[in-house]
Length: 358
Image (cartoon, rainbow, N blue to C red; front, top):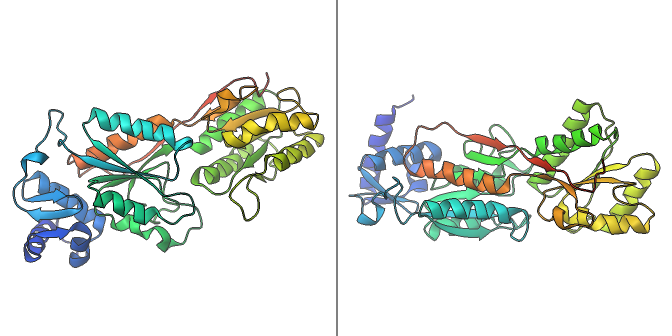
């Protein structure tokens, strides 16, 4: 039998008292056998009403402390937010900058955690962020299609509000499916690139892409959708990862592109910048120049403009993703508990430079 929100909240206050007036939110959800996301929203409402106090993943009975008093913009001063990313030094740097700028404007402290691709450290790093005082989390975990359901089940029992960044649950009822998410629409980004190639007269486009990240999987899916929509011939994707290794082999990739060029394929979309930048000089050794013989577009646009020649590139709105994710998390933290779950997609742009000709 479903119970009303008022009854749930009465049970929550009673349970906190029975636990000595101080209990972890995740333990509270387990004790009451209520989904953690529901308990979290009820706790926000109770805290707003002054009936309980939230602090660092715990809830307690008592009065709001002076340090938690609202600032001039309505956001509590001294707030801390955690950001978990898989890497620094490339794509996520602009995301981090967006979050950092938005957090600074809101008077919020930002704490950074890193869980590298394939490390299975996401849960540990997220827990460390909460233990360090984060009252909300921005998360870019290793969510991939085909992932075992229990691998990221921890996303459904987080003790604090969280927003997925450049990620979304692989299925409608998968781990984290009830969390807010903000990310780039990479499938649309690929469509923009292939449509540009089509307008330049290319009806066959080769995709060279990694296969070890969320973005790479979305790029591959976008390619399959785009060639169908544009009436292009679908070609096998060139996997830029070497077997059993995490690095790529640019020389081998250049040779495979040259083989495709001999069969009439003269346009290539490469994910990501690092692999794309290495290709022009390697193709030149094989007798092919960019853009005269091979039209080249990179995906990511982190360093593409610095290449020789400058690379046309799909540019996901990385900084804007960070800003929007923080803004959404802040709404959760400041008591907007009745918001529906948000799934926000921001559209990439195409920066046309020299490498695709035309």
